[in-house]
Length: 166
Image (cartoon, rainbow, N blue to C red; front, side, top):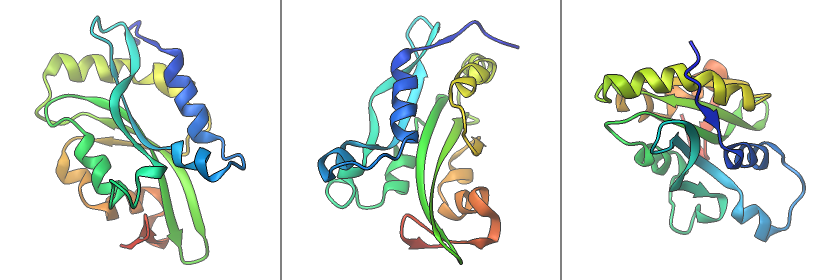
């Protein structure tokens, strides 16, 4: 069931910027988003980019040691969110990068929040064309261990995520 919630243009711009891997200068690469959270606006009518809830590629190795752990820490424990995470991983054959769409709906979130986020998920997913990986997460136990994301990305062929062995 659709909720009538719309997707803010800034959300689509962020997605397109993360999706397109054009050759960039090192400065441009540093500004690329590694992870970003999206939330409902105050009036619950729009999906918007959540202020200051992001990790930039340039933060890694500077203010961010491990992008995956830092991303997990951005998630609110008592409310839902949508997120895009640009996963860098290795299989036995090659290095890969894929965007993962995450629907964060922790058990502790209010029922009303879970319902509106669940019913609005299709609105944001339709705008995110070409996403190969979607992951619904219902609590920290499901997401805190990076090997769970490794399984989502490629089962047991994934040997490392963000440079850390699984």
